[in-house]
Image (cartoon, rainbow, N blue to C red; front, top):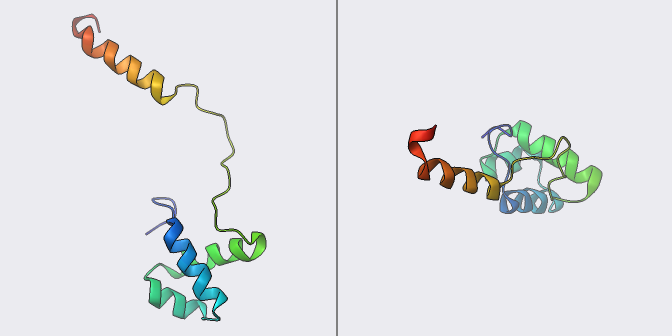
Length: 84
């Protein structure tokens, strides 16, 4: 699992944090969870710095086309197939 492909679930992060708090070494946490060592280490650095397992809010421009707009456009295109 690569962080760019998929984020850790809340349960995975909770388990990693609990194992770390219980005094397990990073290599032991990797073996018990089956998650790549680089992902475990980067998560634990963030956990130790902030003390929280929640994801931080992403920066960047907000989406201008929301889910509701997408559904509306999809209905319009399906209704008028010949016009596009």
